Each structure stands twice: as C-alpha cells, then as structure tokens.
Length: 360
Image (tube, rainbow, N blue to C red; front, side, top):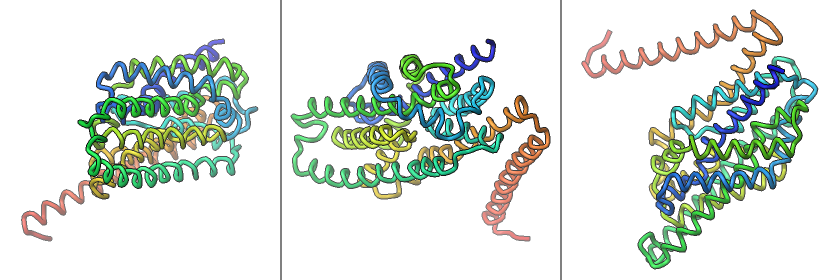
C-alpha cells in the first residue's frame, strides 16, 4: 500500500513538472511575439488546451509508454516508483534551471534503464522512437526555415502583416490559437509520460489515468511554467506574429500526427527547433552559437542518459541488488567528471601560456 501511494504521488508530481516544462513551452512563440503579454493568462490557456489534448487523444502514447518499450509484466509497483523517480528527478532539476527539457526523453530513458537492469527491452520499438526524436525536430526546423523566408518577404512587401500593421489584432489571435494547438498536442503526447507506467502495471485504467494526469499537468503549467516560457519566448529569438504562428502550427501538427501513431515525441525539441528555423532564416546559422542554444542542446543530449543511469542505479540498489554494477557506474561518472575537469584545466593553462607569449 505504501509503495502504491508513493507511485501515485511521484506520477502526479511528475505530471506537474511536465506541465511546467514541455507544455509551458507551447505558448513560447505567442509570448515572445507579444501576442499575449500576460504570463499568467498564457499559462491558463496552455493548461486548458493540454487537458483537452490528454482527454481526447492521449491513449495511444499511453500504450507505448506502458507496454511498448519493456514488457508490461516487469512493471511491479516498486519498479514503477523507481522509473518515475528517475524521470522526475531529472526533469525537476531541469525546471529549476529553466531549461525546456523533453519529458519524453527522460521518461523513455528511465524506462530503458529498467529494461537494461532486467535485460528485457523491445529494441526495435526503441530504435523507431529514437529515430523519430531526431527526424521530427529536423523536419520542424526545415519547415519553419522555409516559412521564415516566405514570411520575411511577405512582411517586407505588405507592411500590414507586421506587428504594427492593421492586421495586428487578427494575427495575434491566430498566434494564440497556434499556441493552444501546440499545447493540445502536448497534452496528447506528454501526459502519457507520467501515467503510462501506472497503466502498464495495471494500477489505474487508461481513461482514469489520462483524466487525472491531465489535471496535474494543467496545475503544473500554471504554477511552475513561467521560467520555461521565458526561455523559449524571449531568450532564443524574438518572433513576429506570423513567424510565431508558423512555429506553433508546425510543431503542433507534427506532434499530433506522431501522437496518433503512439510515438512519444520531444515536443520541446520540436518547438525550439521551429524557433531556430525561423531565427536561422533571419540571421543565418550563426544563431546556433548563442549560449542558450548550446545549453539546451547539451541538456537534450544528457537528459535521457541521466534518467537512464538514475533509474538503473535505483533498481540495482533497491530491486535487483548488484553492488558491482553500482561501483562500475560510480567509477565511470567520477572518471568522466575528472576527465572533463582536467581537459578544462589544460585548455586554461594553454590559453594562459599563449596569452603570455611563453612556452615550455
């Protein structure tokens, strides 16, 4: 009974963090383009749209998370707790840092960690998921890059389409609708990350899990989503109303299509790559040099591996007790951190020698 209660508490806390991370980023384009100036109103609209998306179309991704990566008969209550704990911890740290992290990546990473611990993994399904993690953001970037070029020319030719033109009000409405569509797609795709393991273990029905998960995602968006909204909307690149619409409708449509096929997609990556596509069409590919972009890319790479390692360690400590595996993992982490620190020290020393005009 205690483990069951812990599983539900962690799952719903995770759902709140999903609302704060992936779902909150949905309104980034509208907020960044000043189509909606109130951060609180933006979060309320996101919450409502995400809840509707979860209730109306979240079932297929729940099946994938619950039984498509590892066999559902492995999902004991204790294992569900550890899988959710690994994913939640990774996502919570990212939210504190204000990084728009992919909830799909940390969830799948945590489930894979469990599969590796028990030597049971649907590898073909996992490879398909990872392939679409790469392809969908690239498609988003390419589409918005082309749309950005078209929009730039249109805005130069017809000034009424710009922020100060006579169509400003309707363009702002269009962009807010696009943000709501994107949040709807987030509800379809991301709520499964929190409730999928519960459903796979038979702890809750799909319908009830989606409804309750959707409520907690909405609460998380309202209470915790402000910093991620700020990062996506203001710190990557500023968008015009039409450019923001291009990002939102592109990302939302791609994720909705993926959700219908049961694919857990990193919505935040899709959205951010859409913003980057528009930015690249304006300023060239030098936008990739921005520190915030580099920071996000690094977290994207690390997040599934971090949640994989955390869940694997927890399982080896609490379920499949294997102290030798823990020693190897800890040693590898220490060696990696040490190597990175040594590399940074060497670069600093070389830079100092170069600046002083000296040598050995």
